[in-house]
Length: 62
Image (cartoon, rainbow, N blue to C red):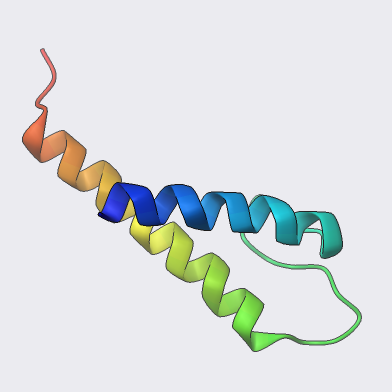
């Protein structure tokens, strides 16, 4: 479920990036502040990090 959530969020960020330039550090360049966008990008980063952590635990490397 988390993996699916991360994929959906990633697609939404790509779409949002066409409207609002999103930097690699997660900041959003706009002429006005949109807290929901910042929150969404940070939530995505958190979910992505958690997904990576779970993969590492469940699929240990060599």
